[in-house]
Length: 579
Image (cartoon, rainbow, N blue to C red; front, side, top):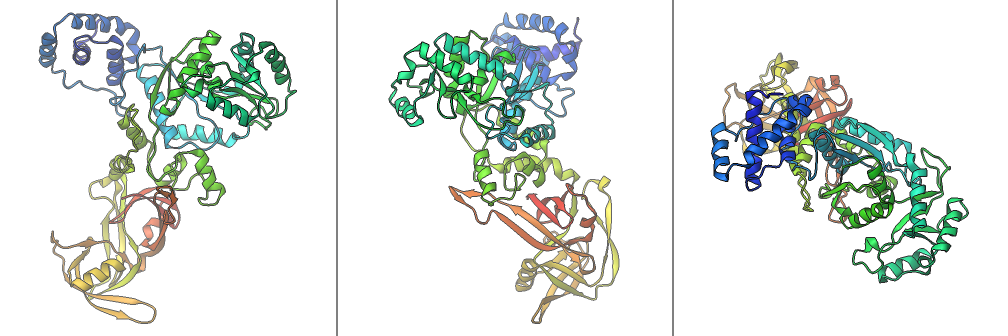
């Protein structure tokens, strides 16, 4: 295959830039990955293209650094044209080590013990992006080996969350599908004296591990063989015995101090019901499943870093193929719990009503609040693969979301804590209001007005006390001259001061009294301030909106002028997404 001139220029530019990053030696796999990211139109010809890419890279690598720089400047490589890339960007993801285009397999292994949250989104997006970057494969594998925590609704919730994010796994499976195979590998470890059955009490195990001392159960392999037969034939009671890995009890890495590989759990598993009592731990199941599933690159959060040695030790003892492990930092926000255990406690204690409470970081809560999956993907990719344990500000996500929704959101009026404004001399008429200042596809709406309006009490008092002229948006300028009060209400009386648009004149939203529609807006704030629950984390704002809002479907995104972007939650309620 002979590449066209544009493609050859793209390959050269990417190759030269990569060479300059690595002291004159371009890395073929990194160049291929970058080309696939920039030119998805070339993927179908990848196999034929690879020899040409390799040849161009070889020619680049024999050049001196100065010649490489000169050639890059000559072909204008600073601006590599990206074609067909309207929905994704790999710009923030570094090349995977030892990755071969067409042969990369990643996996996303959530436990179905709760609803997916923003942390799961980060892991799933990174797993999928790398699989697509290298024209590889993504496996969704439910890590379902604890029947006490797992429910069918959580499998469904995870599938729905991934679908909402636009993530499409190539294969979906459950760890529990392989339970008999995992049992066989556990028995194999006991047979080759790499594991043993321990009947010590949990507190004894904890004390001995802390001191780095072996227990008596470790010493006689024959006793373990007999105990394993008893264990797998369901003769032990729950908590009476466990299978432990023969690691290194004196290791500074406590993960290697004979960790648990299997335990007995009495429970009704959502897939296998009560067929199984002996269940593997994640430490045991993950490396075996990764190896057997053909995973080439296991990407996981930094919290597992100390367990990497155990991961590889188990595969070594079983003589199984070893994937490459890569870590990245967890995604958390200040004041917003990411732990499913913590979220469950909030729900069980009645502090939040459900998994879609807009204060939560679950995907269904973020969807309900008005965040778009495109914004979440952009946000995750902007963080890259850093290991730094920093908490990115949620305002960064809000900014990305705002850029997407702003061009397509109708502008409507909502008045918080409304008071009546009577404008002397104002005549009854129909006014036409633009639904968006720039997007003509959103059209206009017509509102009947007279001399009576609602404005916010805060605005009314400010302008009355300062004697300031202000403008009712797209109507006319007014000035408050009097306050009429009775035992029930205050009515602010104003005079018209002209129609001229003045840059310096404050502009406020309003709702015509005849068009007023009682409305509420839910405002979600951080659930915690430090370690303390924030009693002010949920506010419900009462007011009035234009009646037009009642015609909008649930899920519609709008912007209430001078208030913020909101998502319609029901006929009379919206949720503030962000300002």
